[in-house]
Each structure stands twice: as C-alpha cells, then as structure tokens.
Amino acid sequence: MVGAPKATSSPPAIVLGIGGLYVAQSIIGGITWTSLPAVMRDQGMALDRIGLLSLVILPWALKFLWSPAIERYRRPAVGGDRSGAIIAAGGLLSLSGLAALAGLGPQLSLPVLLCLMLIAFAASTVDIACDGFAVQNLATAHHGWGNAAQVGGAYLGSAIGAGLFLVLVAGWGWASAVTAMAALIALIGLPFLLGPARLVAGAAHTHKPSLIAALRRPEIRRGLLAAAIYIIAHKAALSMLGPFMIDAGLDLAGVGIVNGAGSMFVGLAAALLGGALVRLWGTRPVLILALALQAAALFFFATFDLTQGSKPLLMAVAIVSSSGVMALGFVALYAQFMHWSDPHQAGVDFTLFQCMDALISMASGVAAGYGAEWFGYGALFGMAGALALIAIPAMAFVVSYPSSLSSSLSPATPRRQ
Image (cartoon, rainbow, N blue to C red):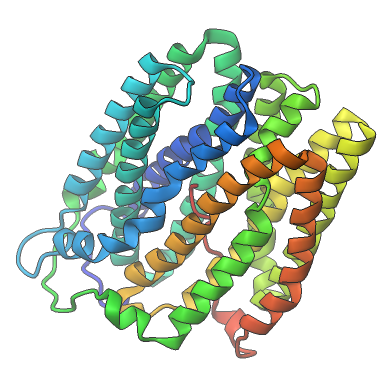
C-alpha cells in the first residue's frame, strides 16, 4: 500500500463507496445462502434438494482462475484505473439476474440455478476489483476506516439479505421482495461509481499478478490447509440451520429476525471483539476459542432436536453461533491470511484463500443437505460438532505466528458467501 497513487477523492468518500459495495455483495450472499433455503423449506422442499443450492458458491470457489486477469485489466501498465468499469458491469449483471429471479420464483429449477450462478459470478468478480481498489487507494493512516467499512458492510448486508428480506417475503411476497432488494443494491452502489471510481488517479506499474508465484510459496499452501480445516469445522451444518429452525416451528419472519439481529448487532460486535483479541492474544488462541464455541453450539442443536427445548433459547444460540462465533473466528482467520499473503500480490493470495473457503462451503452445504435428509438434524449437528472438536488440535498445529504478529495485525473482514 505504501507508494499507492494518491486519489483525488477524499478518504471518507472512498470508505463510504467501498462500504456500499460490500453491503451490496453481502445482501446477495444473504439472500442466496440463508434466506432462499429457509423460503424453500417453508414451501416444503426436501432438504437434500435445498442442499444443492450450495453449488451456487462455485464461482466464488473458482474466481482465483480469473483474478490475475481482472487485476491486470483493472490496473493496466498504461492508462487510468478501470475499477469502476468492472464494478459497473458486474453490478448490471447482478441486477439482471435478480430481475429474472423475481419472475422465476423460489424454486430449484435449472433457470433459477443459472440465474444464481450468473449473480455469483458477477458478485465474485466485483469482489476482486473492490478489494484491489481499497488496497490501492487507502493510505496507511486510513486502513482502519477501510477495514471498518468492510466489516460493517459485510454484516449490514447480511442483516438485510438474510433478515429483512425474509420479513419482506413474508409480508409482500417473493417477487416484490426481490425487486426491493435489487433497487436497494443499485442505490447503495451509486456512491462508489459517481465518486471514487471517477476521481481516482491512475499510476503505471510493472508487477503482474501470478497464481504460479503464489502457489510456490509455503505460506500459501499452509493457508489453504488452514482454510479447509476451519471451514469444514464451521460450515459442515451451517446451511441447514435455517431449515432446522423452520422445522422447529419458527416462521419465516422469526428466522429473518434471528438472521437480521445476529448480523446487525451480534456479528458486528463479535468482529470488533475478535480484532481486539487478536491484538491481545494473536490469531491461534482466537481460532481455537471460536472452534470450541462452535462445537458447543452444534452439540446444543443436536440435543434440541432430540428434546425439543425452548424456542427462545434456540433463537439465542442460533444468533450466537451463526453470527457471533463465525465473526469472531473469521476475523482471526483472515488476520492470519494477511500475514501469509505477499504484499506485492495480496489480492491474488487472498483470492486463493477465499476460493478454498467457498469450495469447502459448497461441498459442506451439499453434504449437509443429504445428511439432514437421510440421518436427521440431530445426527448432522452431532457429527459437525465432533468435526469442530477434531479441528482444534489440527488448527493449533497448522497455524503458527511470531509473537510480534499480533501487534501488527488489523481486523479483517469476514467474506460474503
């Protein structure tokens, strides 16, 4: 970031602009991976079919393939910055996909899956450009504000896409709710396109991002292994939490309140707490703590399925697990990724880590759907809790850091899938 070209747009304008983009991406993620499974289960769809929705994560899992090309196009050796063009094109594709989805309805058909794939491809490409733009144009003194925009944007967007959207579906119907979300996404993306994207100054550079160079580094291979271990432990049953609450007797509005309150308040607070704990303890203790808490929550869900306990308690634990514990752990995980990334091509390195996250999330979601359908929620959550416990010593072994690392890390954003 040192030596980045100075933008003529002010730092607050840049922070506001990229914050809006992160909100928009997280709205899409909340609709796709949290709200849509709950809506489909509310209509009686089988759990194994709902699990197939996780295939939509595929573009997020594969975006490392085109991330170097996007970065080379975004910052050409000669000419101005093209971040705005990439983000505008991706936004239009996303809005077109949402418009089609509003007409198709919440069903698991080939046209619906193709629309969701198109939206995911566009959003994942925008994410590459947005991250690169933020790194390039925010000076070191403003990194904290930029990170706050990422964290706050991610959780605000999740609250809207996974919470408010379900409330709107319950009150207005599918088509009207999707249309309202599309309009909101367009509105909050405009500040970036009308401000920083137009005013940022360009600068010549010679470095060409390379996947080969990234994969040759042992730190990247270690990071990919750490991502796989952590995501398996945290997301082995996460996609079934919404359907589980529906089957436990909550309605769509209730699940929407759980998701919205969790993302808006608990998730954001936990992300800030995670940043403070990383500075105090380093990344490894925070990762271990998050895994232990997640295991406890999963075992609670397994027990609830057998005993049918208090619904308010179920809602509270669901909020803490899906938002609080996830945020706490991902701040530490992405802080460790920052340490392992090469500053000369951090965008490509981060994309590799994110793609491993998405790939494991996709596989876990499909497996969770079949597991819940064949063996029941109790067995699924029990096995997922056991995986989280097994992951604790594995993560402790893989993740290591110098004692001075914690003082140099800043909180990192949880990603939108």
